[in-house]
Amino acid sequence: MLYDALVGPFTEFEFMRRALAAVIALSLAGAPIGVFLMLRRMSLVGDAMAHAILPGAAVGFLLSGLNLFAMTAGGLIAGFTVAILAGVVARSTGLKEDASLATFYLASLALGVSIVSIKGTNIDLLHVLFGNILAMDNQTLLMVAFNATVTLLVLAVIFRPLVIESVDPLFLRTVSRAGGPAHLAFLALVVVNLVNGFQALGTLLAVGLMILPAGIARFWSRDITGMICIAVFAASISGYAGLVLSFQTRVPSGPAIILVAAALYIVSVLFGSVGGLVRQMFPGRHLEA
Amino acid sequence: MAAQLKFRDVTLGYDRHPAVHHLGGEVAQGALLAVVGPNGAGKSTLFRGIVGLLKPLSGAIRTGGLDVRDIAYLPQIAEIDRSFPISVFDFISAGLWRGIGSFGGIGKSARERILAAIAAVGLNGFENRPVGTLSGGQMQRVLFARVLLQDARLIVLDEPFNAIDSKTSADLLALVRRWHGEGRTVLAALHDLEMVRANFPETLLLARGPVAWGATEEVLTPENLLVAMRMCEAFDDSAAACVDDDSHSRAA
Image (cartoon, rainbow over all chains, first blue to last red; front, side, top):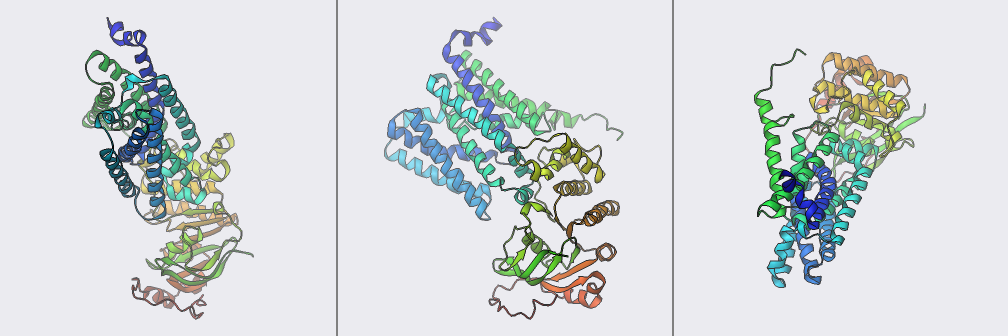
């Protein structure tokens, strides 16, 4: 009975197996990116970037129909353009990154909405907005896996400069020139993972599988390695449980995954071992030294 | 002794307003130089110019062929995000950047050097503590340990003993003397004149322009200090472009 509910869907249906593979690939790459977004106080930047990608995807869609490659390419171009322009402006002027990004993503969004209103149908675009992880074909799945692999490799390369840049940017500037490239590479990875996520979860929820697991991890670990491991684990569990939930009920797959992650987040806020509310209310007797 | 630092009529500032005005002179290799002056005198600006974070508005600063990585810089207001989950050990290990770069592993000998630096600043037992849990003085010790690992020819410390208790500043001052003994050039911006008189053979008294520069007891005279105190802090938005006459550049 329990087996039928929890494992059955995946042994029985290929589309469920594909969906599970995709969501695990997304978790492996997206969750570490989310941890850095959170630690660099850029959680909402991820959300803004998701909006910036949308017009690019829409243009791709208008040019060549519901072709995932065209939409991905369009999304990547729009996302990179906004990310790099915002990053360059923030680095070369005194403007803070968030203000700089807000300007560019709003312009990008306005441009995209204009294009769609002039020459588009809204129904297919809803598919882009909310994604469909249950409709993964081979090509899409391979692409998700490829992007995830690239993300992990690049993250490994820029890990040390990225950590030191997050802690003490001035110090990094005095010992190395790696800070700027690492920062831009990181923004590029954010875009790649958002585009990756929108195949499965849609543009609006793609950022969810990055940020929510990072938020969960914050309540269970004090060091960055632990946080990344916990975030990947939490994202994978949310993905799996969300797929099961959506299979057994009428909840669509994307929202189901994010809802499970949100439930885990609430549990973490309450019972987390690092700064959880219950732990704060009943801290135990103070120590001797 | 050869010069480690040469200032050739340097003017440093922001938006064309000078914060350090027409400074000329040399710092010898292995010098231990205190930079003294009121708030807003341009001490931090001068240091930012030396480490290359700020380009001079005019003139030039020569560092005697030193790469930027041969200069260790401890800023007055560090832009450190102390909520970032990083341990004291990992934080200090970044001081080895010149040797290990972005990818190099931290081997056994590097580990020992890091632990030795932690011991040298008296933070044994703090290796695995997140930096966010340290007190202000402990954090300053951590920053000194990182400077220690940087193994730099030129060390620039911007008000390193602000809000630091006497025990900690004595410990850290011992490190400064050790660097001096090793032949490194050390510059420190300081406000405690007693400390300067007791430990620093050479002093630059700065108030926008150089007021005096030389042996500490000759620089820190009541007359000179009075001149420095009178310095006007505010920028004049309607100031005319500076006519580059040589009269004030030779005050030193």
